[in-house]
Structure formats: structure tokens, C-alpha cells
Image (cartoon, one colour):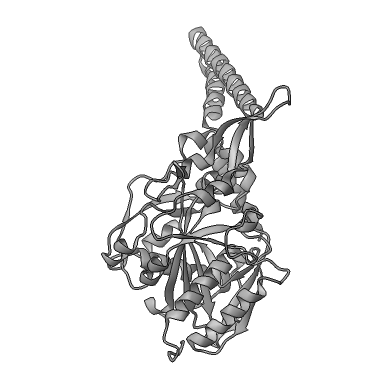
Length: 422
């Protein structure tokens, strides 16, 4: 809708203005100087005004020229070695590498990063996720983009073209089996979507110096992967300097026993792909809304999943934590090890009652469902059929859909087959 588009443009404008603060200060000096000349009233003030305007104009010209030279001298290109670095990197203990492509189940040198969509997960962590309660601690200071990327933020954002800049929640603690069993504290940090565009979404990129003679290979200035690996080892979330905001995806099942699917429209993430249930990220206000009692990471993630389902599907939920079961945790390597959580959510709505809200209507082009027998085995059979169809069908499954289905598959295989769902 027009008001949503206007809000998005305003969000972009605010961020761009914040990145142009040096130029704005220079322009302000010019205006202050002109004001002193016009309304100063004395020759001394007129001279001060003229000098102030001249200084502002000179600084504005220098900064504009410096920015243009830096932009022309630096190119952002794909890091051809990024996939090889991923495949050869030492992973955290207990984590295994998987491909999000439905065409490949094991690493293969014949496919590229975009096709591979690699992620890592830990089956022991996935088994403990739903039953644990890890208290959350919010860091005092919000996230800041690393100094090596600060100068390039605007160019990074122009490349990724995010639709809006919502406040997000970054994960700053590595999840381990021991941390879940001991219910240790988990540290979070306020961040935002544009910071993710300038860090996580640039994981496979590098900055090179443009050749003045256009001959020979460009000189490497900086590879974003330097923020992701240390001595061929994937950095943990507690060491990572990327935004790392929490992603959530949940498989939504309806009161009339349909597994909900959606066709996504034009958007920044997974455009024109098929998605499962609802997928998004933990927003800044999700923390505030989970402050009832003792807030936990699991409570935050469940709340974010159900909120996304409400926004994208107009799904309704009864009160309590039993609506959503957490099925797993992963890190998306092509996005710098970004943390992602997965679940299964039971809505009290019927399939024909689901529709995107006005705010999300432009992101969702269609909602449909697959019926299943209301038992773990019945839902498992439908999930396995979808995964099998994903290998041959023309429409591309989103990465979050594939991982969400796989996580649900593993969870249901652990459940006793006689239990009735819903």
C-alpha cells in the first residue's frame, strides 16, 4: 500500500541522512555563515560569517571529492574463494555441514555458493532446544558496524536493497548442549536490518582496488570473510563482529489439519520462492513483549515465530507456550553464520481463514495448504512428500522452507507414533 511504501522510503532516507553526517555538518556551516552575513549587523560578524561559509564550502567540496575518489577506486565483487573457505573451515564442536539445495545432500565442488546454500546444525542441540529455558540478558550498547565496513555501509545497502530498517535482536552467545542443559544465560544485543545488510549479507563479497590501467587482476583491499573465519575456523557468535540478528521460521499447521505453504512475492529475501508457514526474524519489540515472568531465549523465539505467522497469515493462537514446538537451530554460512531457529506452530484458525495482513500483502502472493493425517506419522509423510517434490518441481523452495521441513522431519521421527497432533 502507498503508506507502507512511503514509510519504507522514509526509513531509507533517515538512514542515508545518518550516513551523510559529515556533509550535513559542512552544509550547516555554510548556512550558519550566510545567516551571520544577513542578520549579523556588524562588519566583524559579517567577516566571521563569510569565513564560516567559506570553510563549510571548502570542507563540503573536499569530502565530496574524497567520497567520489574512494568509490571509483574501490569495487565490490564476489569472493571466489568463499565457498572453498566454508567447506574447509573447522566447525564448532558437534556441528555438521548441510546444503540447503534440494538437488544436493552432501558437499560437492561442482556447485556454487548461491546454489549450495550451506548451513550447519547440531542434532544434539536440536533435541534439547524445546525443553530448555535459557534466561536472556540484553547488552547495554546497541550493535555497531565494524570500522572496516563503516565507510562502505551505504554501498552495501544499495547492493542488497532492503525494504525497511526494523529494529532487530542479535544473538551474542554460542549455543551448546551444555548451555541448554545447564540453562545458562544467553546474551542478546539490539541491532537493525540495515546493519545486517552491511555485514551478514556481504559475507561472500570482497573489496578490490580498481586498476588504473585496466590491466592485471585488481588488488584485494578487504574480504568480509576475514570477519567470519579466523585461521580457517568459523568464528562463534560470541566472537563474531557481524550483526547476526535472529531468524525464525515455523511450520504452521491449521485446525483442519493442513500444512500451510505460501508463495512469496517480490521481496529482499527469497523473492518468488515457495515458503513454509511463516518466516522472518526476531524484532526489537519482541523482547519487550516477552518480559512476563523470567524471559528466556526459547520464549522470545516462540513469540517471534507466532508474531510472524500472525503478520503473514493472519493466524490466531491460544494463550500459552504449547502452540509452538521448537525443532532446531542452524547457522546460515552464506550469510556469515547468521543464527536461525525453527519450529512447528499449531494455529486455531482454519486454512480458508488465512490471508496476509495489509502490511505483508505485497510480500505474500498466495497461501495454500497440504492436508495431513493428524498424527506425527501423518505429518511426517506430508513433509517427506514435499521434500521429494522439491527436487523436481520448477518453483524454487526457500532455504528456510527446506531447513524448517528437515528440522520438523527429524523432530517427528523422535516422537512416539501414537500421539495425536492438536
